[in-house]
Amino acid sequence: MRIGELATRAGVSVRALRYYEEQHLLAAERSPSGQRHYPDSALERVLLIQQLYAAGLPSRSIVELLPCVVTGEVTPELLERLSAERDRIDTQISNLATTRDRLDTVIAKATTTFRTGRPCP
Image 1: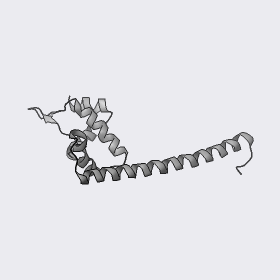
Image 2 (image 1 turned 180 degrees about the vertical axis):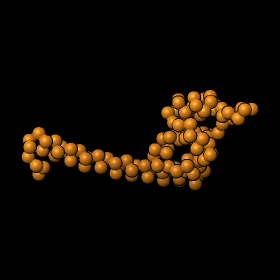
Image 3 (image 1 turned 120 degrees about the vertical axis):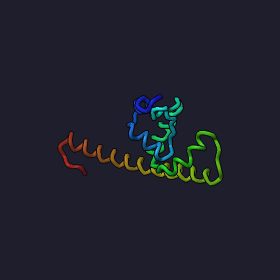
């Protein structure tokens, strides 16, 4: 598929796909006229890249772990790195849950104040 179609199907910009290529996260074959052509499997790869970015992984980390995802090849160092990233994400999730719970408390108090006209205790 061409770059515009991949961008549309993945919900990303054409610029993002070019950036992924610059970072060696994604590869395209070139037509004789220079147009990028991606295999159908590129869609799943772009979605994975998006998820990993959203989880806070930098490009260099994603480049290192993509071979493991694609081929299943892993080294002890990569396994350690993947575990560390998972642990970091778990901590992030826990912190976000704590923040959400605190917001729920604030919302509940504010809702009571709004409905009763009395200030928050």
